[in-house]
Amino acid sequence: DTGVSQNPRHKITKRGQNVTFRCDPISEHNRLYWYRQTLGQGPEFLTYFQNEAQLEKSRLLSDRFSAERPKGSFSTLEIQRTEQGDSAMYLCASSLGQGGPEAFFGQGTRLTVV
Amino acid sequence: ILNVEQSPQSLHVQEGDSTNFTCSFPSSNFYALHWYRWETAKSPEALFVMTLNGDEKKKGRISATLNTKEGYSYLYIKGSQPEDSATYLCAFINAGNNRKLIWGLGTSLAVNP
Image 1: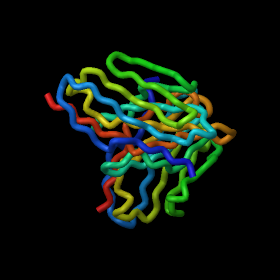
Image 2: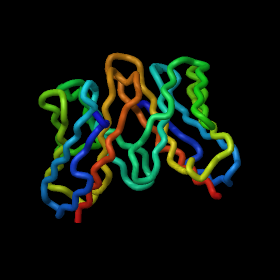
Image 3: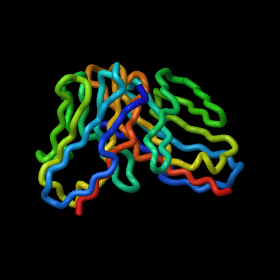
């Protein structure tokens, strides 16, 4: 296992289209986090899962965002009816346990909405 | 609302200078504090996981201290090198059943050769 994997690395989409990103965490990690990072900012929390259960979703997220982790392994983040303000780097991280050991990050998916 | 603040927001130093930055976090409900290093075009990489008041951790020229009673952690870089240029992020983890990482906005360090 080489770490957290995210696909695609880059996505350019037209405004109004739906996009879906995938995150494959480190295999034994039960916690999975999604973050969004815009230029000049630190990671902004979006949501996280403990196994297949989505435990928290940021209030900053509109209803256009949804995330799933159906079997407690990989996760998908979908954005419906994309807007230009959704353009950002979307990062996934996984950790073993409840925030004790460090989180390991994927390389992110760069979304550009035109 | 749990808030994590980092200062300064950015820092420019000359090669060979030593430097330090601060992460402030809620002193109550503490579980752990993480430091990450984030280089441009790469994903954040964990530097330290700190859990006990008074902890001091060291990795090469980089070290960190933790004061959970007053709610701060310092990151020190001794003899900065251009390859140290990155954003340094801290993340606070709250105690309780619903733990999660709460991030600061980072300190952007630029080391000039």
